[in-house]
Image (cartoon, rainbow, N blue to C red):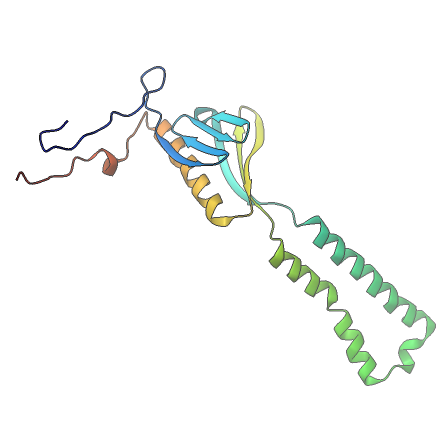
Length: 174
């Protein structure tokens, strides 16, 4: 117990005396100063280099819908062109045909909105580039990637501690 009556708990220490500072913890995802764990996969932070983020592939269902609608509409346009049916169409039919050609664009926009591509965190371990983490949630992805970058910085600076966390605030004696 401190003289001012507050109790403090010593930080947990890992084997070798280094503290296991927890930077991020949610179900299935843990980032400490020494380890990065996602599900059953775990990496030592010291081994990870060249961290970078990307966006994953589009949703396969949305991509197929765009492809199928483009092929069908293009096929209808070609059939009308080869059969001479385009010469017999009215102005309203041309407007309707133009609106139908927008269907693949609208499907692509809707698929991107409803099922956005996932955010991915990649890194190198040795000579192999690995997908470390992937999420559809932008906020969670940002928190995890920042925590891992912070762990890399702490490790590269030889156990650097956060100055605000290590500060002892002044308290008046009563």
